[in-house]
Image (cartoon, rainbow, N blue to C red):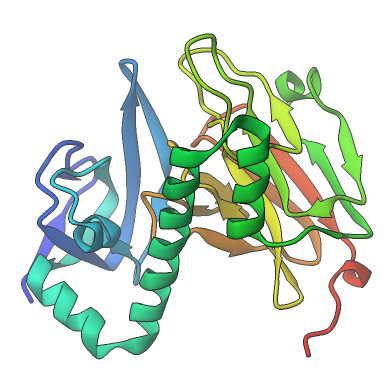
Length: 264
């Protein structure tokens, strides 16, 4: 596969370019960027060993939904769409991961079509996020003064714990029936259904709910534009940023060891 080198500030691809290849990071770091109402928002960074554009190829999107810019010197392997799909068929673990992500997105799309406000939101929560279960010794607090005006802290949350935004005047409600509903103004950073804290196989994870600008968990970006929709919470202190670099929606999650039951 051909490799290509970029230098600091170079653009690897732009929002709106054809989504006809996947880039695998051989070295360096890339910022993923979106334009929102004329403002540039950095959604997160992709590091060595990760991919760019794989979900666009899998889903058959005609255009890139974000831009990518080199942070320092970068080298990438460029994989054509057909070659990448052939790689997926020969790598069961990669195929399972991609199928899981697509299945989640299908659940969300189906329920958004048939939802009926809160009743529909409850169905969506159950089908996508699973049954509710109390989590002891987990504390959710805020990391910015702007957010502290809306929310202070929440103890002993129930998983799934959904964080979302109140709709603007021209929007319908979110589909997930958020447990923590916050307010934002245009240009908005927080999506109506943004992220959830979920339990999976006895561990706690943050799952991005296909938000517009993604979620970052302990420095790892997840969501529509990145290689995963989930990231684990660790015992002790965690940071969640919703809505890209510089967003005011910063949450601190303290997880006590006792809240993480031993795996079976």
